[in-house]
Length: 448
Image 1: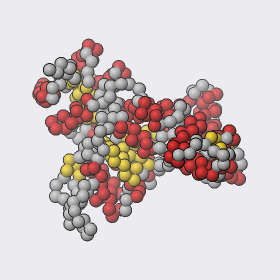
Image 2: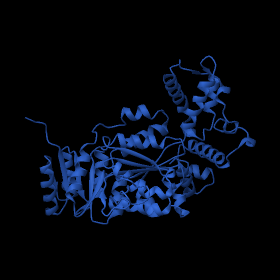
Image 3: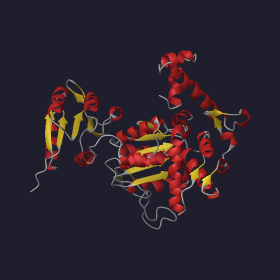
Image 4: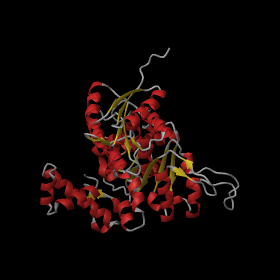
């Protein structure tokens, strides 16, 4: 006989019919339900009971569901909250996701969607703090990496679309995989796609699939990437490279949660979480009218920035040691060591290609070095990207003016912040900047 306690669900809605519908549906799922008619009753129940999930209406007689989300985030951030909103209230749903809600439902509530959401939320891990899997695969003890790990842990507990920004080679796909693997969809597919690598004429077929005979060469039915990712996560890498015609179709698929294959007559319901990334400035692409603003707002519910290797130089030694261990294992040779001068050269290199470039540099040096010791000359670093104390050593060797100016700007702003004990207003005054201009620069440089 199974005597394990039933999981508890808190239902918050002032409409008796909605409460009854939710209670009956969840009761059939062998879940114990508690109901509240307003914000006050919900807060009182949260103080007395431990819950595994909260379902709340957006509009309550004495407040809003958003206030309840914020209350729970402060008291019990690992309790998932799903928001119930009126049909078409997309902005409300997005605000709830930004505030920390797990997911949202629209009225009238569709029972299959409700059961799917509840099952997904109840699969979330209960332990707090970044998992050992994140710490093991996302190396580095620098403050930017500690912060990134915390953000991944938090975002893994949500179903919100995430826009992962960062330079090429910084590890955006690894971050996307970790968000997927630490969340309730971990047992379902993670499907990565490089949007820039698909020929434009094949995009619709690749994303949504096609029926046999729908075009020349379609010799059999083929499911698309959305169908392949059903139940799991679809990672759209280099999403800024999508042509405008495909952006329209992608937006519709995300809004309707359904796709129609090329040559097909009926739509297929798909349940996917969308994560996307690009090394381009997506906001600038919108301003230049190369990327649809409505799609941008659907994809960029939450932005997660992956720091460049230049921003976490303290992690270079640990990353290098990890790469050399892996190379030794892969080649079956004794592990090579870095000469102190070689390590210093790595720390003073700008790494425009980030972690990916570090791996390539060490792989080449591992092959070239003598006596299993990597000397500075074995690294063959581009002199134009070598730095002194984090800035360019010789202006005649500048090969990328924007990167150079950014490094100087970052150094001056950090210096001003440190001298003013991180008082942004005082630092802005010291640099003769308006506070608005200072805030823009902090965001651009990933220092906010």
